[in-house]
Image (cartoon, rainbow, N blue to C red):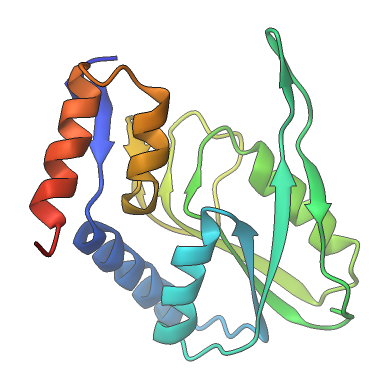
Length: 177
């Protein structure tokens, strides 16, 4: 994968894109009772949105896709919400919609909880996604590396690759020391 296929986000990039996402949601007039984040990527985005939208009621769900050799299974909710959501207005949050399968799985799950309405919000969407969220900021056709996954991503790469060098340089630029 070449450098042109990679987008390494800084903390500032992410914050200002989530800030813009909050503005879009506010402008729409949608008021949620509960913010539901999709773990793990949605945690950071959800925390920022919780603050910016003054939405203190937050819950999380975990969705896993199990892969075998050339086999991708349907994503499954592995950790749900135990409390009643009946009649609630929900804002479902993640960091990115890639294929759309995770978002579709989360929406199906939440609709079984007798909610009043659910709207989805992510800062980034891939053009190939099978579903678009209700609210998003950018359509990105690159591999996105979030600032909270630099180390995790580096562990998967050849340390001498151009991608690894780009991540390390971005991390150094953003470090406090």
